[in-house]
Structure formats: C-alpha cells, structure tokens
Image (cartoon, helix red, strand yellow):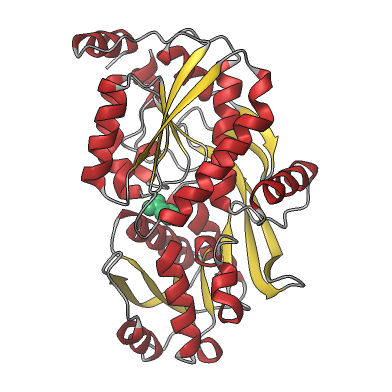
Length: 390
Ligand code: BEZ
C-alpha cells in the first residue's frame, strides 16, 4: 500500500491527515497498572524529561493524552482506536509489551498515525510486519539476546537451560539467544515457558533446570516477574550450582534494589545501563536523579530518547503525519546509550549492546560493564519497507 493509498484510507475513516505542525497531540500508550506498571511509569518519567530537555529545539508544542494499556492486547487496541479516531492523535508513543505491539500494528499502519515504540521488542514489528509508520527507539528482542549467545559460548559455557514467560517477547528473546548460542557451539538442554503474569511459584521450573544437566540458566523476565524470579532463584540456593544469565531486563536498575543481594553476580546484557561512561549519560543520570530521586533505567532512556526523536522530527517542519513518520526514520544522535540511528531497511534502532554483572555498590546494587558489542543492525527478517514508502 503506498502513502497516497494510506492517506485516502485515513480520510475515508474520517481522519484529518495533516496535523498542525505547531500543536502536536501525542497519544502516550503505557501500562500504568498490572505486571508492567513500574515500567510504564519510568518510560513516562523519561519522556517528560526528554520533552523538557530538548523541547526548545522545535516550535511545536505537545499535548499528551495518556492511556493505560495494562499488558493487555485487547485493552490496548481499544485505547489505540480511541486515540486515533476520537482524540485525533498526531503521533503515538509508548507500548511496553510485544503482544500489545502486535495487536496495535495494523491500526497504526492503516491509519498512518506514526508510532514511536518506546519499549516493546517484538521482532515482527520491524520484520515481516514492519511499517513506515512504526519507528522503534528502544530495542528488538533479537538484538538484545543474540550477542549474549555468542558471548556465553566464548566464556566456555556449554549447556544452558532457558526460562521465560509464555508470550511473544519470551518466545522471541529465548529463540534469538538459543539460535546464536547453538551456532557458537553451545547446547540448549531444556526450556520452560511459564504462564505470563500468573506464575507466583517458580519452584517446579527451577527443579527442572537443576535436574537438566545444564552449566547455567538463561532467562528473560521483566517487572514484577523479574523481582520474584531472582529472589526465588537465590532462595532456592540455585546461584552456586547454576550461574544465572539473561537479558538485562532481569536486573534492571528500576528494580534491582528490590532484588538486593539475590541479584548479585547475575550477568545479563542490554542496550543501556546507568553506569555507561559518556557525557550524554552523565547529564541524563543527573537530571533524572534530580527529578525522581533515583537512577534511570533502560525504560526511562526509551522514553527520553523517544521524546528527543519526536522533538527532532517535528523540528524538520514536517507538515503532516506521513512527513513526521519520514522524519522519525531519519533521526540519529549521540544519546545516553551511545551513538544510535534508525536502520532504513526496518525502522529498528541500531545501537551497541552491553554485557554487565550486577554488583553491590556504595548506595545499592549497581552494574559493572564486562563487554560492549559493536552496534549491529537486525536482520531484515522479511521487512519489505521500500514498496511501502514509494
Ligand atoms: C516486551 O514485551 O517486549 C517486553 C516487556 C518488558 C521488557 C522488555 C520487553
């Protein structure tokens, strides 16, 4: 479908396509309740700080309409409809869960309202279901987990048991890790996918991991599930027998102090940790601390960078939503996580990944960076962007 067709479709369903460049209505779609509520709050805090920090680079003003998506695809789809059809949002941002991103993808694409993804890593949204209207300023599930498969194999770890919640993000993150780990010579000796948002007791899965003959365990959990998982892993005495690895959401700065010593020595990988040493990160950490009294997490940096991308795209004078979407795809800057840009083939972010160990610091748990992998674009994964934007 080309842009003219999309514009016609937008008009057909009653959308005034051009937005006044100076007054931009932003639909902020985040979980403010449920298992990912803390993540949503941190993204919102980062987004507000980003608008405050960079807002004077554009003449545009931003009106924010916030909607609670929970971690629920049907709830989020209803909220997206309201923002697009009723509130006439010029741009959407947010989205934490990969399942929610999957649910809203079609309405975003067919309405032509640009979406800046500020968390959800769903590979398909920048793969086979990519759209010129979806730009991701966070990460993709494959991008964060692939480097860790190679890195762990290089450390001589041979056999791994994996665990994750049973939904799109868990399946994709573990799939990417398992592919790169086995390609590098490792072996996956067992896997378990736990009911998402419903698992209180990880004991039976930990017993399975212990009996599997693995040398280590690799997991994806985030939010409240990450806190309970890490605490239970420690209290079941698993850490000595089977070192714990994972994608870095497991030991996010947002909740690592709630995990405390249970998180000590867990090794994970992510595109942002607050201890990254660069001037942009120093300024971000200081400003975020001043506003909130805590260090920023990866979730906060997604919000901050999404706001900066929106400001920079609107400063190009984009006169309508399609122009704004085009400008978003061209954003690149040095931010708190290092140099980042958008891959024109997929609209996914290109950024370095950091392997880090959680250690006890002077004022709480902190992150020791062990390795930085070079910025790597995701494989195109079936994305056929060019015909969409002709
Ligand atoms: C996801 O569903 O894509 C996701 C949720 C929380 C943290 C990271 C990824």
